[in-house]
Image 1 (cartoon, helix red, strand yellow):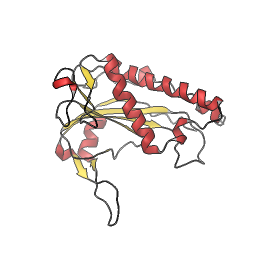
Image 2 (cartoon, rainbow, N blue to C red; image 1 turned 90 degrees about the vertical axis):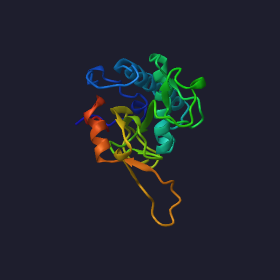
Image 3 (tube, rainbow, N blue to C red; image 1 turned 120 degrees about the horizontal axis):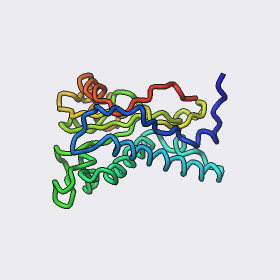
Image 4 (tube, one colour; image 1 turned 135 degrees about the vertical axis):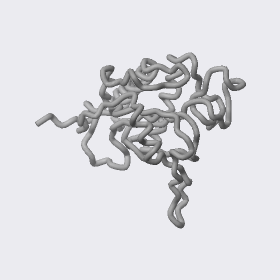
Length: 215
């Protein structure tokens, strides 16, 4: 029986596995597998440094400290900022809350656009499907899925953060379905990637680590 992961152990994320990348994946804008790999490695190193330092101070690890949506946003925002360091043909959209997150370098004035059809939207998610956006979009979507502890489940065993999968595809409006909301709910109405979009994303997987290593 494997030893239980301690909180100290869980401060060390599981390394990105080079052998688990799909070299046949189709990527736009001269983006390469190596660029994505390096961005993922950057995040794993960042998380390990942060968790090591705050654990030494008696502070809870970052994953269960932040609300789940905030941690997912952190993953997405970090990757969005890191990819352009390695891929010279893409830049972060400089427009506040602009869409999409990454845009072709020099394509828009001062690399800023409120809403455009050219580029890649980046998301981090704990879930393997049901990925959401604010509206149905005809755009490239790239999702980084991961395993981690969360603030909403404080009693679950400690696990080490790891990237589980990366998926990407050019989605069209028909690949999204409005999620709606129940009467009286104040939740923002969102659109979810439906079955056709999910199938496109899964068929063009970039990274897949399906080993059951949590716990």
